Length: 250
Ligand SMILES: NC(=O)c1ccc[n+]([C@@H]2O[C@H](COP(=O)([O-])OP(=O)(O)OC[C@H]3O[C@@H](n4cnc5c(N)ncnc54)[C@H](O)[C@@H]3O)[C@@H](O)[C@H]2O)c1
Image 1 (cartoon, rainbow, N blue to C red):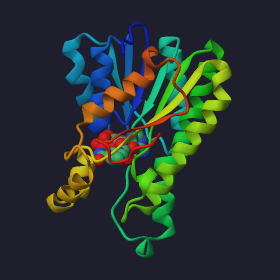
Image 2 (cartoon, helix red, strand yellow):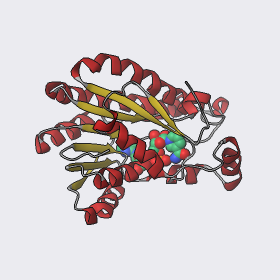
Image 3 (cartoon, helix red, strand yellow):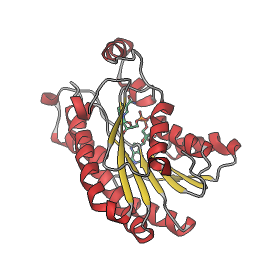
């Protein structure tokens, strides 16, 4: 899990799992951490939380649905630090609604944020990683993409798309020693979950989880940093569920 000497970029760093990911990178000695988010204040708050660890961490605003802004962010990180060793994106969002009542505009928004933006990120990072023949990319799927969730149909489709994307891009990039994996959270105690679900729904979710609780952002972040670090050096193309057994696969 140690990340000494590594320059890492965390997108979605202003809240929830992304914020914890920055904290875990800082605790594991990452040399430089860029904490990016559309919510610039949130990203700044994350940076303030790790100041005490002595980590070299800076906040950067970015909207990853803006292709040019995303490319600029990644190019600037490489320009500033000379390298990009790991890219982690935890960005994701959905509303809860029935598919029959949704609009194509809503589908487009959910797909753009949860799937298309991941293509942009990976496309922008690859040339830098390929030229150094090293790199680790960690995206965020969801167990909703593995088993489906009522009220999150298009989100589940997008998150399932991440699983297929990770498997395929990992095959293309392995020759350049670039690993691509994803974390697949189950219900996790973050502002996203708190904003979406009332206590009754959470209680029902907990019943479906063999470990009978929801996860913490740190439990997700630990796996993201493991996948970003050299500790997972022979793992690629995987989407690892962190969900207390909600989904199990061989
Ligand atoms: N919390 C859960 O229960 C849960 C379950 C399954 C999957 N997930 C997935 O885990 C990931 C993290 O979720 P979380 O619970 O930490 O959510 P969160 O809402 O707490 O954090 C998401 C962050 O992404 C940022 N963001 C949103 N749009 C952005 C954009 N266009 N550009 C840059 N940043 C943007 C937000 O500002 C926020 O800081 C998401 O991909 C989510 O779909 C979460």
